[in-house]
Length: 629
Image (cartoon, rainbow, N blue to C red):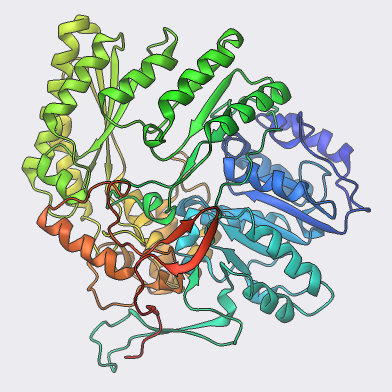
């Protein structure tokens, strides 16, 4: 059943940016609904302006629509004005391509990039008229699938999702659809059993979680006591999916109907990172590194320009300057597309002279600003997080940046890291002032240094996953110190809200019991938790209190090495023993070299030619999350 266009025409003029909700964008794909037996709706749980810049959704849209018997359409979280308009008009959430309700689809796939999207998932399910909990849905309802970085701890939203795709989705999503097609006329239980047999898919219903109580012998009251499969099809742990080599990138990208956050074309030149920053979840869960050949990137850029008309291209990677042929790639782009006045952006550059030269090569005279992320301001703390770059090198690179024409440098730091002292915090201000003085010698008072300081949040599958979130009072004291030290001309400080970090940490490190908190917070009005003007932390704290759980238990508790962690039900392929060794090295301030220089035996799968082996690079007995107390 399609949504009545007359009704939409009535409500769209009453909301901001109605172009978010009309579809019909250039390169969007509208297949014959009746002639296509399997229908998938890709759902991004944030607004169109952000979702249209999400490369993961674009990749899946391209992969699924490349299949003759499957169609993929899109939906995004409506902004609050459109939510109210839909509810008042009793219009269910619909797809942009065919304007059909989400309930009409066979599969709805959510992309969960970060934890603050959890309540938006519930909002979208409710707008679609679908039961929130997986236990309340059956074969009459679409399968609800989720993937993305936040699903490397799927437990806080396990109550609401039928199946999680862990890791790379290009091949797994096709296998998910084939499993559904083989069982579409069977009961939901059979569908989920078929889903559980797809490698890399976690079906929460088929795992029982037990918790420690005062009567158990572990001494870990309230922690996970055991995770056990309850059907033969369920694997433990569920090992993430890895595609290698990277499949061809999408080139017929959808051109947005309204201005979006990153209004440019993007191509992923590399997936994964070898730097081993101990706080970085993406660097751990996206291992190993896979690069696209230069010629493939060039051909993709040519196709994208021809098929979209974009004049800016983002070359995406966790660390763009680590792409082995980045110099040759940038030179080749300039040679081939120089006459087209193509703008290139290279996010995530390292703080070294090579990166500055790359930035200069693509700047084309536009020196708007240069960004570095030293994360810590003392060499001791850089040893803790395994980001070994000296202060002297930072100053030298800043000088080179200013001398090449940039007037603004942005510096990213974290506070609240394990072992941090007040001297380490004060050093942030010292480094920022030193960089400003370097700039003033070149540009005078026009030199500007913007300092962004975020609170460290320990994330699953990293060497610092056992650490605790620093208490809010301590973080606010450190922020106040920086505010006093950086209250000078040419310096600008921005900080994150410690209360927001508390929520993020609790959700990132939570167990399955948090499902009740997520649902209650949503019922109390929590949604768009990543948006400052919409964030409703009081709803969250009330929800925790009503459910009887303490957010500090999840966020501000250092976890012992023998504790079973909720996210051990899935595996990122990096061994727990390696992560513990890295934790111990962190405590000693020892660094590890780049993985390309030396293999450190993390346990990630290794590539042999063009195919993946099933062996660990450093074999050892398989580690399981199942344990009794």
